[in-house]
Image (tube, rainbow, N blue to C red):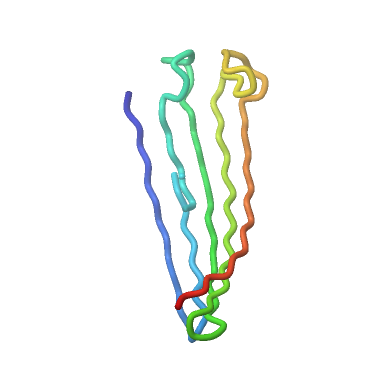
Length: 105
């Protein structure tokens, strides 16, 4: 089984603020693979994602972090809900937003 993937990202810092992001073809990502063995020779699985984030240094030893992730998964002729061959439920999407504080001492 073969698979292909690539990732591109960037980061920018200005004073206490750092922002960045990445793109996959799975931080944005795109990943292509055979996926389910039930669809060999019929369809490939394609997964894509986007990740964005920022860190702000409030004070020495205290950082606030925000990040966002969006991802999709698709495979023709495969039902992700039942794990069987079929045209229904062949798309999955996910979104995640996280906020955090980091204290270093």
